[in-house]
Image (cartoon, rainbow, N blue to C red; front, side, top):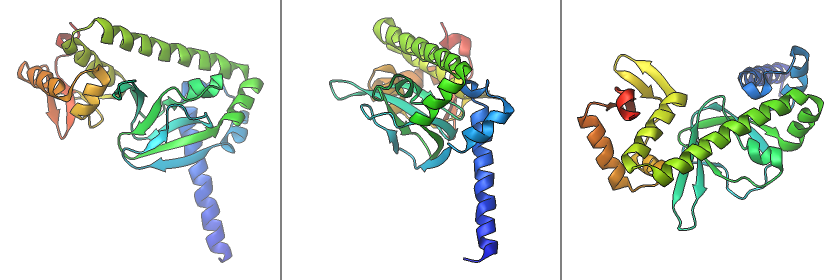
Length: 240
């Protein structure tokens, strides 16, 4: 390999590292780091790509990395004792994967699976824990994120326990729109292709029931679909 090719590869690597840093800097968990700290952090970042429906990690695996989603959407799945999957959350760019297990040192409590082509940034667990020791403000950010995850989990448990299936599906759509929604002239579009199986797994119901209720929401004019994506037209009706 000639020197020009080597230089080209080095330049590409530098650009890739710079892009990863730009992504990680948008994550609230790292917002407290100072400008001079980022050279050290950048050396610990690794970019990884996954095709659609690939597994990033499995429930029960040892936590080797903390992940930041760079591009694409990832669902967090819990496997029930009767063999059914429950989708606990759907996360997009800038969100974290595996931070609870990395922080606690316990195994991953959920499975992370890509819903489309996904790129993530991996930070080795030992490197991240070392950052926490040197920059205590990062630990406070972790506590805030764990609190958010706990609220999401509590809301899901409560919804599965007491809400009618129509309410569960409506709440799931509103939650997805909150984190993955883009305003359009027709309403708030959920920026991911949501299958009926995904919706059923998120709400503890069957695919047939999810299809029936989504059809009812469309007939009532509360939602519509466009190129496989759900658009919420009347959020106030879904929120009843």
